Image 1: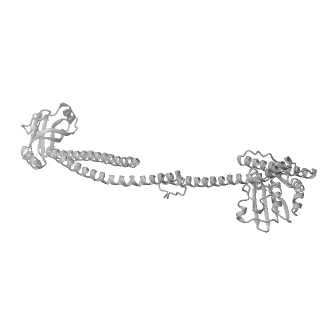
Image 2: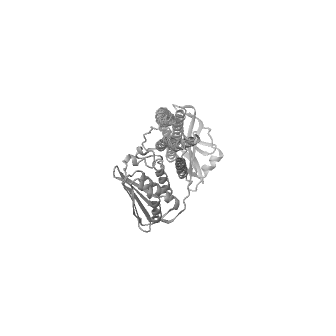
Length: 481
């Protein structure tokens, strides 16, 4: 709520200050306009007085100002309803009309009048003697010089009026401005409240959503209209939630993999360790008296030990590849020669399962890869094919496609479904759970390593399979740049 009050006060102050500035400015402009209009009117009256009631007579080389008091009285009578007061000066302290007035003009103003300048006085305290006015009043007046053809000052006509009309008008304006100000403040307060509530509610939505996420609820989405920065923030928040949700899913998935890994690793290690322990206990109790049995037991322990070493090494390779610690030494190799050597080494393994190899590689097939890791990739894929193929055919093909090298390994084994293919790169996953106990010491981690090594080579892999028909791995190694 603190932000609500802060925003509300901010909106209110902005509206109030804006209205105050506009009101003061408008009042000042109105005052200036009223004075300007009054001065223009008084100047017109002064011109009428000068032309209708003042005459210049020359006698014996002297110039004399003569006032037609009858006409002047008529003019003044006509203007009395407007509280107009007329004075005629022939000197700064010489008043020709009215004779009883003692109002004088100071030296500075008189010099300005002699220079032909009209003087406008905003406020004077004078006594006006009219039917309706007979007391000191604040006045505004204008002094207009009367010059002869030589530019000599003959007389000064002063026309003044009380400021009551101006002040009355200004009072009305002030009153109207005050009403308008209070009305605008009330409306502004309502508008400020609505706007503040609107923005605060949007921020509150973000706050509630943030608390939901903090409590572990990632099924949060804030609807946005792409209107302003708050909507942009909400959209960024939605993107963050999606990223957190994906991270949470990935975390849960990795945690599940970790648990599965621990379970599978323990299962895979338990079998050879149990075998080795049993043989060692048999030897300790002298159960293997026959030399042939003893030799056979030692060979079995050697195989189980080798299986454990392979399992540990495979896991180390996998973790290193995941952590980016494996460094490849890529070079231009002859893939055909390497794969032929791998097939010769694995021929006995294939024959035990009734499988046979069909090598359809060209005599020479260049590939840009790390030598040892390339052998590991090919070996693991072929070993996987042997493991899941009985009395079948494993075919190896290869070709160049521009600067790339494509190697295809196909088998006629048990095949896989779509859901099974989505999991083949998972560590310890086996498509056929009945083959959980590997015939060749395989643990289900081989394809996981293949996938990581292919990623390090920046190679592409595509797997196609059909249950009961077989599986095909297509590897695409990019050439040297």
